[in-house]
Length: 162
Image 1: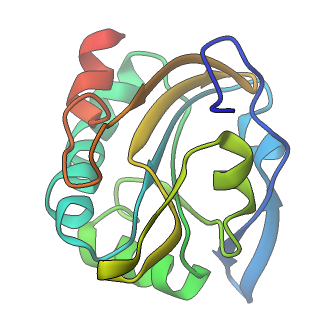
Image 2 (image 1 turned 30 degrees about the vertical axis):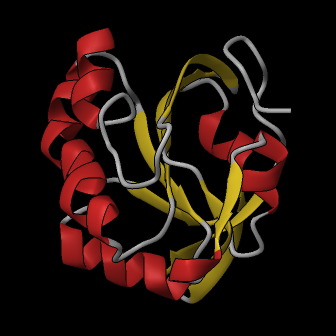
């Protein structure tokens, strides 16, 4: 079942790059007591993710924070090394976006947002989505119908909804 507005995020252990390399981080520690703009992408370095979705949050980071968002978090079914390289490539690191790797896809599956697209090598990837999360509870959820579209889940759309 897909997570819905009003649900609590599933507990998840994700991976981020720390000063000493990959380190585990619980999603609850990132969202506890905070308003978080959370977005998921099918894959780092892919077309729509790199050319539309990530830039929409990088370009709106300051405006989202001015509207009360404490943290912006990107999750993808990739490894933390790829997430770190993608953050540098897109400017997400400079915008303060937290890049969390869902390396085994467990969080994505628990959210009910996983999909497969074998012709392009996607197995257990995340559907494109964004959610406004307050203290671990989903306040808004926007999921794209197609992985190649970034409209309702964009940073622009989230900013307009705040």
